[in-house]
Image (cartoon, rainbow, N blue to C red; front, side, top):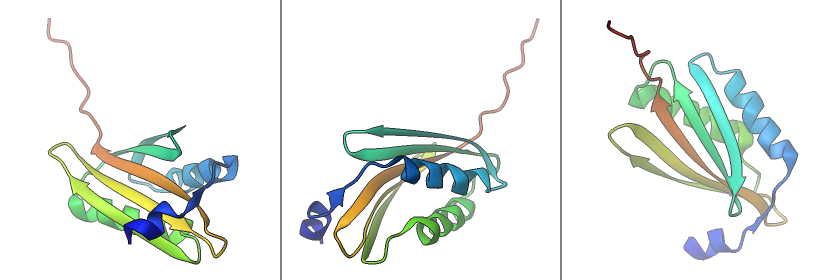
Length: 115
């Protein structure tokens, strides 16, 4: 499996970032999304208004359905105290594809000043 992932010809196109942006902008539980590209990977930081394992899983699987290419898709999930991260790679029949990391975290509570 690792060899298959390493053989993907990673692409960087503005359309991929746009599609990621469109997907998360339509999710009602998403408070904000930040998309960057570095070292051949898209990095997506997603802040959720209601953070639960089930909500994260549902949004991620909807993301995969929306973004995956026809030939190959693979992901890995990691759970931390303050966030859930996924590594996701997908490719089409021509072996061109993209890799992204998605980090889901809870919206911070507003800080109130006490005087």
